[in-house]
Image (cartoon, rainbow, N blue to C red; front, top):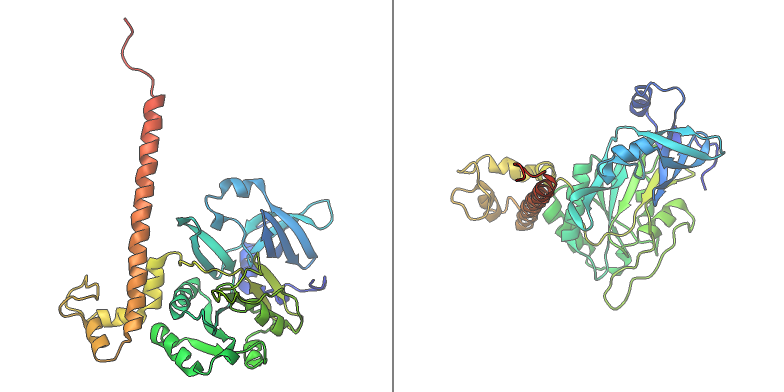
Length: 359
């Protein structure tokens, strides 16, 4: 548990957050950062130590989606109640960055995974579950979030073909920074630790079993997060982290741990494609047709770049998957809107008073 003497700077407070807080114009409020969220109950870290909090009723009433409510990593403005260590969240300060995905079971809704992140460690295990395509999806979402993405290849002691794995990732991701490490031998841990510094927030994202909790334990120098072995039957991990949590490292830096996410779809794919595939967009300016889809159209400069080795085919395939996913999302959203309008028409029709006079 963090020390009560923790400062706002230790938690990532900066001049921009200070300006946003002052703009609220309410001297009765104090700033705090969301450490854990569970069933609408929040644990916060502040200059007053650790606090338990709930959102104000007005905030809950105005929230249209989950993204309008506090998430782990958010800076919030709170009022402390008469009861010691209890508070009410009045407002969320503007997010500097936000890692989000489509909500499970409802792809038209946004789910915020973590907020105000500086660096995202996209963790992948170098075991039999190694999946470059999945890493590519995380990279697109990370670049969209506003945080710096870094790929972390864990369990490097299990692979002799490490250089081949790195090349596979670069073929679909471009010039992203890649680090390899092993929690068993501690190789590469010092390199990861160098990214942590006072006030900087790093989030670890990846599927279950890739070793996020083990990496956090190595970075903290203590066994804080529970770990489990990967199932031998299918090489898939088990959920050891069941909720998102913000951890302040005593020597400086903030770590956000997240549960494993095997199914992952980036939020706002249209913008993600635009931001994450600038190389393809640049090539597309010389295509013969302005609406070229870069599949088999004549005069496609992107296809020519693949043919002459300037662009990796895996990179273009990743682009097509994201574009197709966006089209599917738009279709589902249109269907939901049409169904909603039909229901409203039926309700309106039933409730409409009869016309004409009775005889």
